[in-house]
Image (cartoon, rainbow, N blue to C red):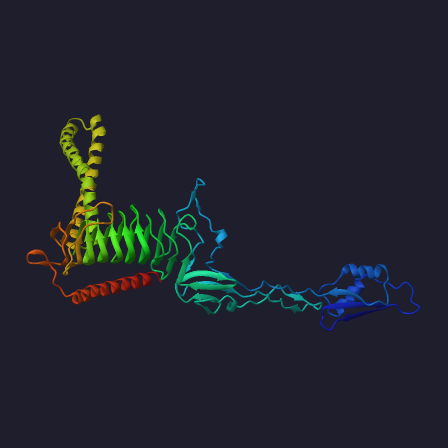
Length: 507
């Protein structure tokens, strides 16, 4: 009996052929003999012991039988690309749900807008991995196989670049997906109102993104971003941005302020606060609006108040108004808020002082009592109360001192150091925006000086002279326009510089 071992050329399989010699009776054949034959040829891996047993039991002679098979190497994981900030599909964006399961339609919604900064990583490629190695029948290692490769080029969209195994944003922008491609857009358009369908929008102002709203910004919602263009109107919504352009107007009554460094708007109508550095109104400011800025330009001002640090430029002033020029609106706002807080605490402060004075007198009596009886129950009962009042008074006195000090500082900052002016090109006339006819009734402040206008006049240039507020209809319009534009250039440069500083601080 002869045991022949054959190994395939690729060493993946081993075969045994037991040759029965002629005339040999009952040859001795067992698994140990077959295993030794394999071992002698170096076969150690993948031996099929059940097959060896079958060969011996059924005396399968003169047959080439596969008795060992290699361990196949495994395939590793495929390469993959992970998008760090992946926007949600519209169907996946839902309003915020509060703890009591009440739906909050007003808060910003996760995934509605996904933004990135310039040079921020937006996607990472993870290479394919090698699978677990195998072995041939001789025990030699067969390296594992790599998973499928994938390339970042397939994911590169607009305003993105490849840096090694990362996809990097080339500018500030909003992420959008088109198939596999990741696009970064510095301008993002919402073809809807900002309302129940969208929720509020909150994008840091230092991220240079332009948000375009094709409808209105509805009551109770808010938008914060760098640049905001609104095709419709802004109702009683809170706005906080650097550049704001409204094709329609700012309307309605409400406490939510409109704040931006540069504001361009069709009209402002209603009791709203509009605060900025430059406010440019193509039509009218009316119906109780409060505008506070460094420069204000409007076609008409009627039934409202305007506060400007440098200049106000208008064609008409109609009805009852308060126009304040040469006033640092930020210092004025802070001064008025401090004055309100001081007024609120003055009465309780006086009450504390009176109580504390009475407590001081009582304290003197208790000290005398302690000399007679240091353990008298009144000492334990009343002394802590007196000390508590004293501590509370100290806190109130400190707060009052801090508030009054800052109020006095603001008072010194209120008036502009420049030469403010008001120009009313076509004059003061009757207010015809409502059914009622209202005679001109306007108070004009230039720094601390004031004058009143009660009759329809041709208007003109209002400026500060040695007599206080003076006016003239003889002025060089070109010279004034250059002066106004120079103010605008300085302010725009300050806005740009401040934006760059805030942007660098967050990089």
